Length: 128
Image 1 (spheres, one colour):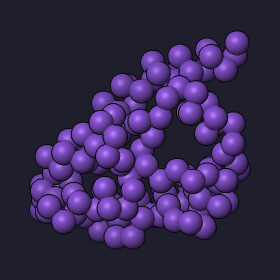
Image 2 (image 1 turned 60 degrees about the vertical axis):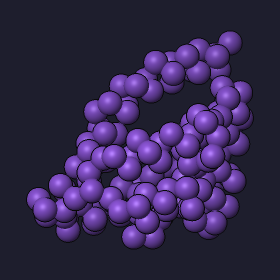
Image 3 (image 1 turned 135 degrees about the vertical axis):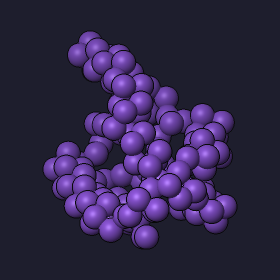
């Protein structure tokens, strides 16, 4: 499946970033937040949500238990979703060990909780 994030979306949002931003410093994240077009970002998020729902409706219970092939895991790096930086590259191995169900449930469970504290810290920096 082709990624939603492409050059057209990057241009609309005013960004060059294609990766998860795990290797970004706090200052880089704040800079990204200041430059990104919020209207375009919200539109992008809605497009990702709609595409995700299309894909989810097609999945069967057999699909949910499927592991990813080495070629599929390789796309994570090939398509710039993660960088070779140590703060980012570990995600390729981490995600590669999950099945489809694990990848789908992770953002709804552990990922959000794990990043909530960091978001609050950055908001505090912005307010200063």
